[in-house]
Image (cartoon, rainbow, N blue to C red; front, side, top):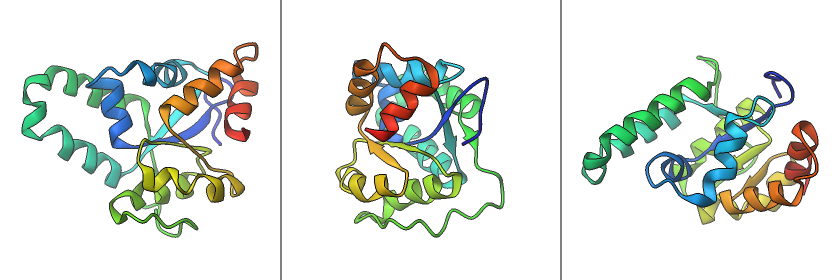
Length: 166
């Protein structure tokens, strides 16, 4: 874990969750947005494969009318999500997803030593129990929000530690 102005939990955020944050403005993703904006909350990590997927999705015709929102979301992503060091291999994650298109998120989590993977994808969520034993909590944005709410009396490191450990 790399501290940024206090404790920061490294998190991989899948494409659909980013869309919820910036395109669909889903209220269930608001606790994540607040954690991303907090100096001692969550630091997103990204890689070339996750950047490529997000870029490809945002270029789809269904997002044409939302280009300003998409551009703002992409700018936020590039500004706030820490890029995995170029040349760092994303291969070798001990977890294998049933959907090969989602393996990139597990590879990034493993390479970055992330403690969180936020997703709504059932194939990734199915790996939660096994990944948790290895130090990676795979949570939906709703679960993340509930765990943060359950620990409102704590701040910073204690919140993140409880969310990951729960």
